[in-house]
Image (cartoon, rainbow, N blue to C red; front, top):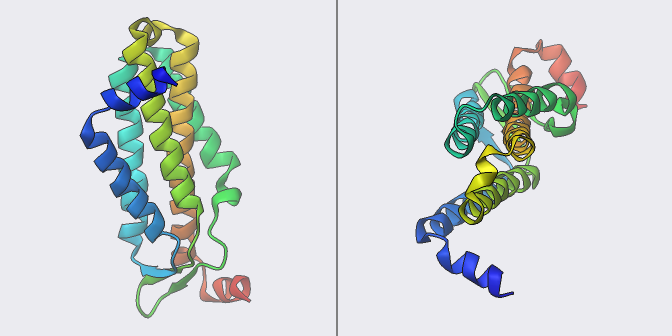
Length: 174
């Protein structure tokens, strides 16, 4: 218990502000909304950049960490696309917007990615030598890539709605 208290007390204040902002963003995703294709794309792109920079910042240019990140990203994009697809989402050609029903999945993914980053930071602060441990670097890279890949897969499934013929979109909504 003392260690947890020490970890939490040494966490910079801005980290808690970031967590609050991420939680607000995640909770906003639990409500149905109309969004543009740009908005659907921006968050996953930001998370891809942040996860890649997290790997670089923690592990430098270690090939195993970068390979883990790429493998996690690829696995998410190919294997989990159907799992994170937004059911009952629809595209309106008239408004050029997507109707996205509320979901707890984005909040879960946001918190998961935050926790990975936090745990890696704590581990490296306590044991700096772990930055050179290939297994740790590869697993962390894979986790970063996997979580950000889930966001990208979700965005791709939403963007695909805008390119489907109207008859296919109507048939899926029924």
